[in-house]
Amino acid sequence: MTNWTKFECFLHETGHPPLTEKPLTFPKSWYPLCRSADVKRGKVIRQVAFGAPLAIFRTHSGRLGAVHAACAHMGADLSRGRVVGERIQCPLHHWEYDASGACELIPAESAIPARARQTSLVCEERYGIIFGFLGGEPAFPLPGFPDDALPRASRVRIMDFDTPYQVLASNSYDAQHFSSVHHRTLLETPRVFIHAPHHYGIAFRAAVAGAASHDRLLRALGVQEVELTANCYGGNTVIAYSGRTANYIMFATLPITETHSRIFVLNAVSKQRNLPAFLVPLILEITHQLTLAFLHADIAVIHQLEYKFGVLLPDSDAGFIGWLRYWNSLPTSSILNRATQTQSQAMDFEQLTS
Ligand code: FES
Ligand SMILES: [Fe+2]
Figure 1 (cartoon, rainbow, N blue to C red):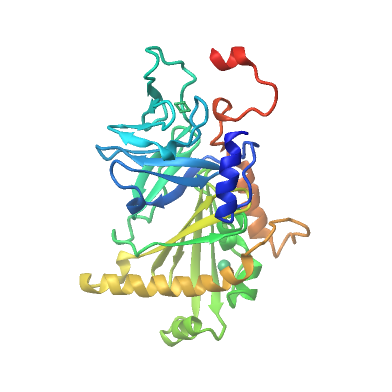
Figure 2 (figure 1 turned 135 degrees about the vertical axis):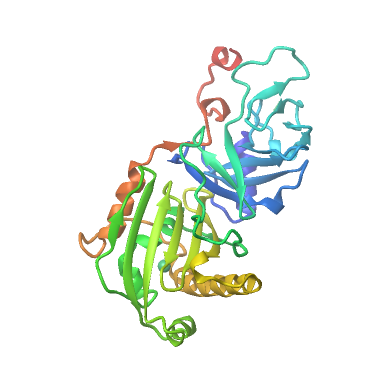
């Protein structure tokens, strides 16, 4: 019985499809892992991400660690261990790993093999979310609202989908659906702009059609058309800006498995609105609710989407094709490295003990 059997039971109980030993790869990027409040000082939690279980912990000094949960020694679940000072201690033989995943203590031995290390993600916190960079040293800064936004952001809404995360991350680039799902009529061909290899942006104007209450409210407020800009970073986080309402939206997505995903949605408002400080929380709440109402139409149609590319149209699907090319060009990484994979094939004991 491998430790993966335990993970599969866990996933079965939580409705996730079984994990496989296939090391799934994803673009090297910052991914939202959980809420900051989920990981108290001196505590560890378990979170499945990138098709594997993570142990996310906060040391006693407050430092965050996110490591592959299967211990490099014999695969015990580190999220069942405990935080000891600045390290996570495995529950089985009490090996201790620091936040970078390096093993720093083996009670039974004084020498620590170089291979005794967990794959880890560099962590940063912003807007009450713990983000982790998959792929070693961060290749670009954690995406956030630009300096033009007021520092205070709305509360965060988290939603799970039984569909691949690319569906969520590419949604802003699917021009056809703006009309069919959101009743926004494009007034021009979207303009593409690229600032860096990890970035892909588009901008376009669209008329606000539709009879939904949030559409009617927008028109009643004098917003007949919107100017939208969508900036994608690392293939998974989109920061959108609506020029007419001076509203920023962050859609940060996490692949839980190949077919299950999670989205973190939050808003900020531009300083250009010159809002009095006492009105900011109220405006943030209203824009957040309007964003969720807008997303409701997407949520209704993307569950169980298979993400296949049967017939793409060179003109009507140009934005989506462009995003897909960009996503495909990104360097990738996996949370599973060779040392932490369970071997179902014949094992090389010489290699394991070296
Ligand atoms: S399995 Fe973790 S220390 Fe042995
Ligand atoms: Fe949408």
